[in-house]
Length: 391
Image (cartoon, rainbow, N blue to C red; front, top):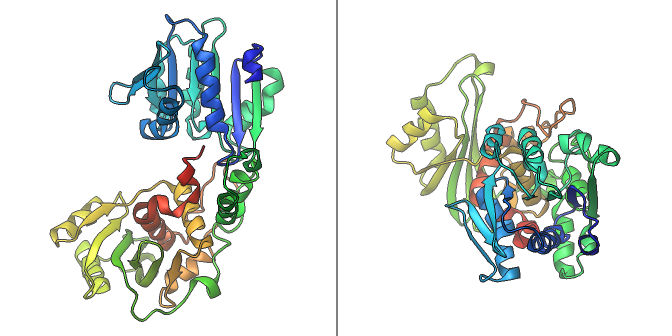
């Protein structure tokens, strides 16, 4: 705020660091005060990974900060007004997103969670900031040191008109100490280094090092809760399905069906897989079957057999983070009969040759169906940090 007051903000202003460190709140305050001093006849832009996340992380907090008389927004119209300044709203969810902002002339822009943006969108956005004194304010959590934002901008900061500010969890003195302790306990491995320590580090080794046979494997004879089945569909590749009992807090994988057409050299049909799902369900009332979203023909087969089907949420890294958090918190338990799943926990690894966070596409079929279940059914509950909206 002192940099804003003394007119020392630069063209690119990035606030980065750990979750819940206050960087989003501070960036929004700075964005509001800076924008209030800018011309009303110029155009401004706010963008996030999606309009939904932008609304949750930024637009609703802005409304609370400055009041409805000073700030109004419509995600359907994709525009907002802050102190009379018109702000366009956009999502940057894929490489085609950069076409949304071509041709614009912007006085200022705000980016929420910049590492989630496609590089092409960001490059185009900078080219649109062509009014004298135009500025960009952005936030992000750290990612891989090979991420384009780190290599091409942060590491070259001295060559650019750019300012970075690092925020850590301890910087936010408004947080309840119990919440801080809970968040620190929630994250492990690469996610702890990035989201708690605020480090740009490589994802390497086992993806789920926190999986502990003594902690996570137990025999339950009569689990209580709602029953679900999660499926990673494969024809030649392995087909993995897990039967889950979820009590609203803890999910227990009570049984599984795991079949590899490649190993048996015998490919099963959708009708045969349906029979296996029905056998797995047994006498339990299945709330829904969560399925690999690409398995269109098998989804149709399940629906024709009167199963309620939901397409699994397939955000890989975010899903891995949620599974990691659930394991760390003891919210996932597995029957000793789930041998395919237990085996894969010991083999599922990060691809260290890749510049992006990506698992090796081996020994990942049960891991995928576990991720579909956690991402789709346990959802936000698997991440304590979401309680604070990532601010």
